[in-house]
Image (cartoon, helix red, strand yellow):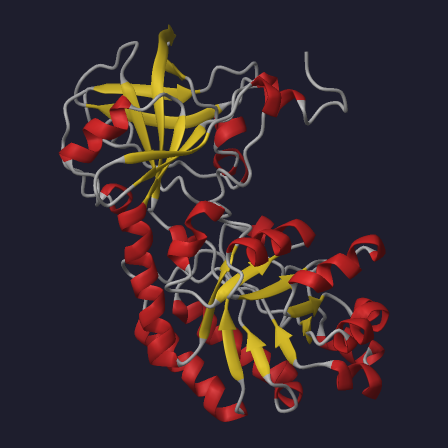
Length: 405
């Protein structure tokens, strides 16, 4: 397929030379774009300098530790959702802060967690009562996650912790019922996470709800962590409003402010290169079977769901040739979406998916015995370095204790 420059932000840094390099890589493979990661880093660093906040990498969205040294030039550290992420962050960004939040901690893991975490955030007063004193005695900064019960999301209910009956965060009612002076005395900070791929106007609304319900608690802590979901590096994101929100809270309560975005760090900074294996027709639908799987390699496509951008691919019906992209697995619903092209696709053609650095390498799986895609780093000098290769052993070792035959 000929190279045609794309106006989509996911491919804004794909030149003809990069396209040629990407098309030569073995498929399927993920490719991290160093130039794009650095550009995102510069934006996040500027926000920190203007607002005097600290920004952490939420590893649940992006955990490719080979580039942690690169990212540390722009970030204050990492955020983890449990023991293994905490260990990863502290190992590969050792000079950065390591913050941990988990819905509930396990007794058998907590002592090891104390080796890696600098901040430990608890989800409930009961968890704070059980583990808070030990964390404090170990010299850790202790916080509790609050739920301001302020939903600002539309269409992402699965990611809305403020939905009625949600299990994440302590509501004001639970605070009144279960917090006592001893537990409040353990606290160094408060944490909330309510956003998903949203702009600063949603944060502004949420902050008002936080102040309305927990303003008294803010007066007695040292820091506030505003969580993730801030799409700071997106082209239309209102960074001026974000800075104003952060500075207002900092100055009003004399506290330190943290943000922990995941997507913003690696937004539009990665690709998934795939190859056409077959083209079939069923009635009015022309199916393209790729060597990538939505179910295995881009699970958020099905879980969220969403339709990822494809280089040269337009909305169905906008060009002459329309195809339904799907994977080679036995799952009938292993479908990425419908795309159209100016030229027909054929076996062996390369397909480039964009914005594939986030929620891919950290969420993929080997259903059907699918091979995990190799991971490459596309460097600023134009070379592609293989960071990881995967094979049969990576599939088999998850399923049994013996060495695979």
